[in-house]
Amino acid sequence: MTINDAHCHFFSSQFFSTLARQRGTVQVATEICRELQWDDPGAAEALADRWIAELDKNSVNRAAIIASVAGDEASVAEAVAHHPTRLVGFFMLDPSAADATLRMQRAIDELRLRAVCLFPAMHHVPLSDDRVTQIVEFAAARPGVAVFVHCGMLSVGVRAKLGLRSRFDMRLGNPLEVARLALAFPDVPFIIPHFGAGMFREALMALDACRNIHLDTSSSNGWTKYLPGLTLDAVFESALAIGGASRLLFGTDSSFFPRGWQKGIYDTQQRIVERLTISAADKELIFGGNFERLFPAAG
Image (tube, rainbow, N blue to C red; front, side):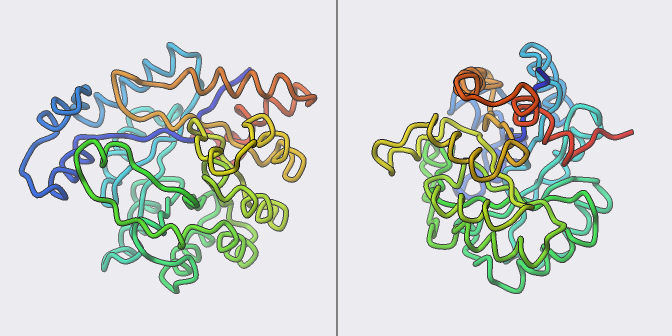
């Protein structure tokens, strides 16, 4: 079965330098990584090579890599340009930034990235804001560009490890607001990661209402603790019953080295899907086919 991972974070040197600035220090990536006991990512091309080696080791065909701080589009673009048939570029955009529109245009038109990632709880910009609508309008004018929206519980482990405060406003990450945008822009693919990260009911409602909304399965999905008695098996079963296999995207939420690609996430989710009474074709859609449809490989 072809495996494509729809959710990996590209923790570049720029990513760590940005965290250092937010911390109020002048540390370089090497120093931050030493403190975290993680590997220094080095240059973007070198990190891309390491990702490809990791994908090869685990028989993963292609992966989406996410620029995981706003303003780091260039690192991901360099990695994708180095391995265009294996990597697909996503980037985080802060709609409140004065240059957000210009960054969006450059990321899509010049750097050829394929999805814009919105984190309303992080950037304190409601999905109903006109600035968000402008971003989605831009995506709608460029067929093949997806909009990724983080909803529900938001925690960033590396920030906590570095003692960075995270003033996230989780009231702003409601999948029903994604549904409003998806209905207004029916040709734009929307991706809600982690099954809505705690807002599972709302994510299912959005999935049911909008044919262009997809859920990604990434991370350990520890948010199930907020819904006592809910199992990940039941999450998959409900999502499949409402949206069908064509709107689930397998992902791991892999990020740093030396941990690398999280095979345990794949193993758990693969076992769950095997236990469900779905066809081999539907399993192929979840673990690889839907990704290929949304992000066909460069010619």
